[in-house]
Amino acid sequence: MEWMKLRGQFLPLMIIRRYLKLTYSYCNEKGLLDKKIIELKDLELPFKIDLLPINFPSPNELILNIEERKNAI
Image 1 (cartoon, one colour):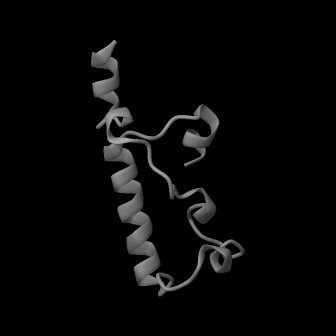
Image 2 (cartoon, rainbow, N blue to C red):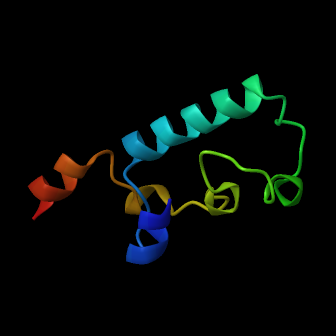
């Protein structure tokens, strides 16, 4: 997620999908799904909860994967 912040670019959908699935699974296993982000910020997590995207670009701005971006050039 730091990559998105540094580059000012949204991650390709296949990467963000995998990241969100892993994050969801972790939070589900640890019983964190009902917690608010503010409650989780001080926990030692394997990801930065405050960097999870809550706003997404419009569909025409999204790319499926990195190869798609290379082929578009």
